[in-house]
Length: 217
Image (cartoon, rainbow, N blue to C red):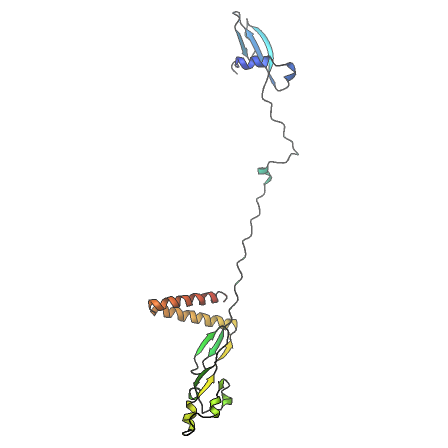
């Protein structure tokens, strides 16, 4: 180690002895034949007057306590458990669907409620007269008790009289409802391919509704 700065060593040489402890170094005050003074951490050379002194140095780090808690970084030796992925949302239930039959022409359509309104059709449309009212439970025909054309009468007048009818509906089981919804969606997409621009917008909205209902299938 080269000669220490004179000012620091001089200040250290002036420290009271009570401040000097184990954390000190030994320095030397050297005076040559010409009276020049220097300070160094090694003994003075030959022909120089030497005076030893102690000066403070940085204290060593305290010894580690084996029972002390480890730093926060070291404490996390084991990785944190990975969070389980959230379960998928439950599938919506299959919507209720009813298959209904038109009383006047036998065409099939579907209803979400199965509720239908009565409507008027000529008696001949439902096969009257040709079968009794007991054979057509969905027919209500008060006019049949008093034919509207009294003079001509006969089967033609009876067939021309209007009767009240109501469509019949039957609730589908979930598997049948899913098949019916898929069939309706397929028919919708097929119609969109040949539909005009104005028609295609309405069909697209209908297709989205059918796709939402199919989410539970």
